[in-house]
Structure formats: C-alpha cells, structure tokens
Image (cartoon, rainbow, N blue to C red; front, side):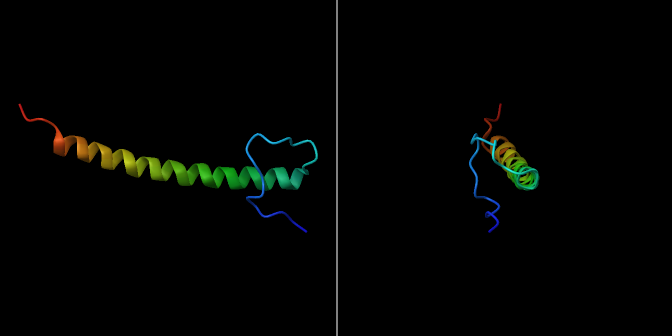
Length: 58
C-alpha cells in the first residue's frame, strides 16, 4: 500500500526509503516550498503597504 504523500517527517531516517518514494518526497517538498514562497511574497507586499500607510509623515 503506497504511503500518503505527506506521510513523512522532516529529518527522519531515509535508509529504508525507495528511490521512487524519495522522488515523491522531493516533489511534495518543492510544491510546499513554492506555496510558502508565494504566501511570503504576498505578506511582504501587505507589510510594505502597511508600513507606508502608517509611516510617520515629516
């Protein structure tokens, strides 16, 4: 029975993990990194807008 694509933990021993499973994990992690970077970019834009809005005027 194949493992759920998120049925692994960061830092766990990889000795008994197959090449196919390792490739799957890399794909899952790359997708998650992309998702996180997208969210980070959104939040940076929001933070910049808030900083401009609340910046003290000279």
